[in-house]
Amino acid sequence: MNEKAKVPEWMLQPSARFPPPEIAARRKIWPRIRSRGYLDKNINDLAVIVREEIFAEAIAKRKGLLQSINPGVKVISIFLLVGVASFLHSIVILLAMNFWILGLAYFSAIDLRSFLKRIWIVVPLFTGLVVLPSIFNFVRPGDPIIILMSFDRQLNLGPWVLPSNLAITHQGVMGALTVILRVSTCVSLAFLLTLTTHWHYILKAVEILRIPQIFITVLEMTYHYIYIFTQSASEIFLARKSRTLGTSNTREQQRFISRTIGALLSKAVNLGEEVHTAMISRGYTGQPRVLVSFRIMALDWLWALFMILSGLIFLWGDRIIV
Amino acid sequence: MSEKIIYQLQNLGYSYPSGEEALINISLNVHQGERLILMGANGSGKSTLLKLMNGLIFPSQGMLYAFGENINEKNLNREDFAYAFRRKVGFVFQNSDAQLFNPTVVEEIAFGPVQMGLTAVEVKQRVEEIITLLGLEHLRNRPPFKLSGGEKKKVALASVLSINPDVLLLDEPTDGLDPRTQRWLINLIQQLNEAKKTIIMSTHNLEIIEKVADRVAIIGEDHQLVALDSRERIMNKKSLLIRVNLIDDGFTEQHIHADTHRHQHLHD
Image (cartoon, rainbow over all chains, first blue to last red):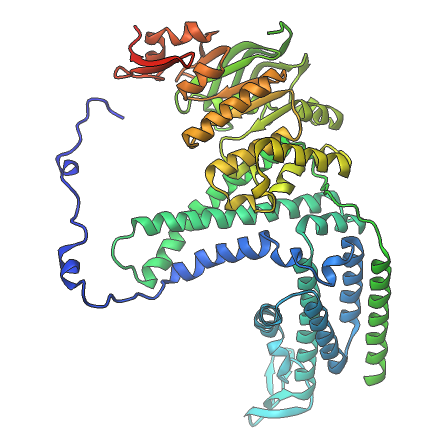
């Protein structure tokens, strides 16, 4: 700071009157409650959810069926069932498996409503979009259920010949449903594992599967990075809130996000590097070490047996029904 | 104070990848059991020096020896070397948020000992002892990011002390602490020093210098070592302290004389 520089005149004046006179006059009128803005809803809630749900590992701390299974056994058995799910063709069996997973979630003290929401909002949105074209006969020929459009003749597009009707086909819909259900089964299983297991235990358990060290380190750093990222995001958000005068509309808030996203990234990268050095300083060598003895108990054997049997039953059912 | 030298810095220099110099030509020795305070204005390079001494970054010029060993990238890439060095030297970061990354306080404190490969029983015992020592019982299962600034600092200290390092590097440890927690920290540092720990600490806090320092090293705004002397001699050189921007002309220093009386006066 320039020692000789004087404080400007305006800075010596008291700032705005508080409460402002017009508000003081209107005090008796019920204040208008503004709805929370775009930013408030998005950034801050995201940060809170990430911290409370992922990092506090609230569900993993509860007492439940999956929480009491050895992480190593749990990881292997769930990977096994993911394998089984990707072999299934029958929609009935896939549905049955989804219900079976819901049962496991219920006995693991997971709130079923939020569990279902997590899966059935994300999966149809992403997988649904991917498989959407395949329900039409242009992409996958088959028996039409609904004809959407009729052309008077076949269309020739270079080497492709398009049929004279645009229709949704039976085969296409069944195929799409199978893919969506298969994905939802796998995602449910993955959620089941990550919700009921501490992250560090998962990493340690993944080591059993002989996944190379570098991937584990990257995963571990990603985990810490996401945490720092949301922390920085909510700090930037709060700092902005404290300097926001008056109201700002959604468009302005969206502009704010696009402008600050770069600053946020570099902030988070810096802090991420600092966390990494703090880890190294305390002896981290890239090898996940956790304070837990992965001793296999009778319950774990029972669980492994149960999972193998369930997998076999699903595979057998799939054979009979298809 | 034992005469055994544990840190030897010879013409040490550090430049950022951009070429900007953070430290220039620093030479000093640190003795075992000593309490050395690094002083310097903001941006003079104190934190960089501490990171160099912890082997987190490596000098661009000169040599850095700890316990007679060369602290360079090649040596620290050796697992056995890094293992021994990390056990010897603990670093409390200025930013507690950088240091706290585990889901609970207990796991935070256990992180170091677990990395060191201690058995579960040893780790648990250590964690419990540190929790009792620092009075963290009520925070045991709380996530560190939800703690207050002072609590975070305590947990960060606990997470380093659980490794039981011989040398403690503290980067502005009293930064943002309330007076009671500051006093608590000063007492703890004194106790640790009585237990033969070497303390190397950066600070602006004149009270902590008064109570803790054996020697003071001053790094100037030109990133060079300006002075290295006993606490008494440094604190009496007002012109030096003004020159390196640690006090200014309007400064009246509050001395606390052996807890018998307090008064304010100016040094010349």
